[in-house]
Image 1: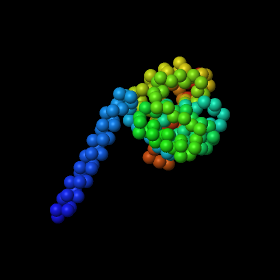
Image 2: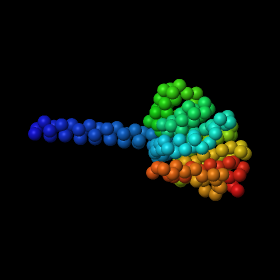
Image 3: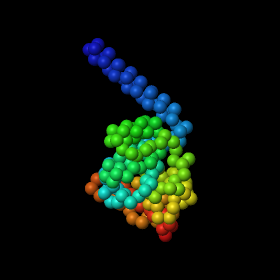
Image 4: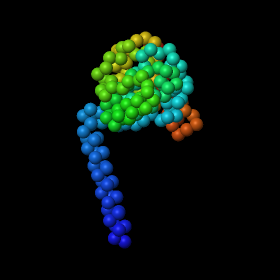
Length: 188
């Protein structure tokens, strides 16, 4: 009985220590992330996007908030097109770098905010971000992207924008919409 009690206490202490370290990491990066959480794009959504859009003609593909790199790795592995991504969460950034190295990809991810980047050369951008930043991001994209550039937004629409089309993963719990916008026609 005493061994069970000691084991239980050790497990609780280890759990407490893990939560404490996790809290310290979150606190340490909050100034950089602005409180944004790392929520990976569901694999079925990435598959739907990669299966539905021919990315072979795009020259400069950007991912705004690369997370663990599942979009960029899926896209480059399928189409051979490298993606340039930006990530401010150090854990997600590390996972993304690991995947790029594991698959020996040409894609790149930078540990910095996409807000500080000039996206003028991009002809395709992808994001899976929270709705509270979509209005501000829409303004940035309108000011920087050229006419004809494709903007892909998983889950959340840009307020006031008219999508060219909307994709959905029908046979899954992840049936959230994927909005496709074409710059120049997005205000329809």
